[in-house]
Image (tube, rainbow, N blue to C red):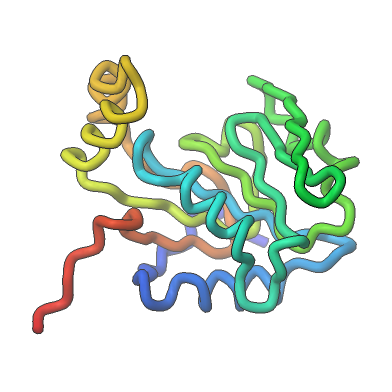
Length: 182
């Protein structure tokens, strides 16, 4: 399989769940989960979207078979309604090896990060969230005391996909997709 860049396919807010569900369901199984990387600049909505998928599932993939690794932290269920946070921060490309014991029986693993290539050699699916700078700034300032500084630091950074993947999708961040003309 070639590691040449795969052209990105645009998803809309109307079709993203169905498309991602079909692709990830076809790839993943309990013996080898699909690996979906959600990437984008800070404030684009990566963590919010990953949490939504974990809670609601995707077509063909029930929520109980999905886990999310966000910023080096995996939240796993314990006793029905409690969750345990498993932390393995790494600056090395470890392909998520420290998390492997907690990934058994999962059909989909979602890795959230602006630069997944720092931790992974490749993944099955990349979903790049795009968000207008004005909205990213508003979100970062709203949630962090240093939000404007974080925004300025990443304002001119490229959001190109830097990891090899079989499927690459682009989507406007939730709440930013232009309204269809009436």
